[in-house]
Image 1 (tube, helix red, strand yellow):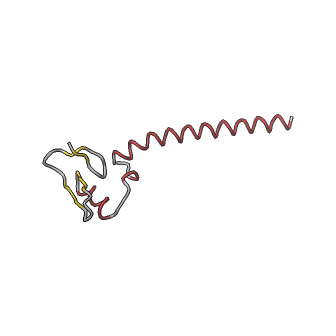
Image 2 (tube, helix red, strand yellow):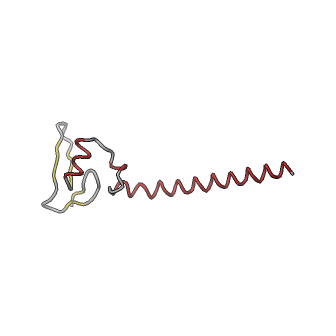
Image 3 (spheres, helix red, strand yellow):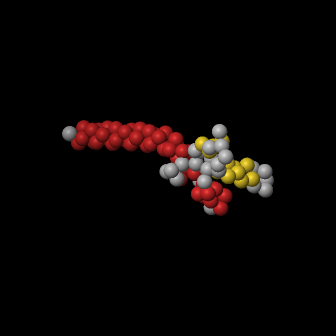
Length: 88
């Protein structure tokens, strides 16, 4: 089963569109919306929350953001404790 070149969703047999660029690159699309965003507008699928690419990438980036926030908070607590100790 083919997958959409933009959103990454599976394409049922007998449905969807195939788009071939002049340079020979083949794109498979599940809907007109996916074709329009990639071919006409040249958009990045990672920036759309409804695409599978965005959903897969967001979990990894969210975990990294949470870890970074925890590290920053821990660093801030250490700095506050050190400044309190130096004042006392």
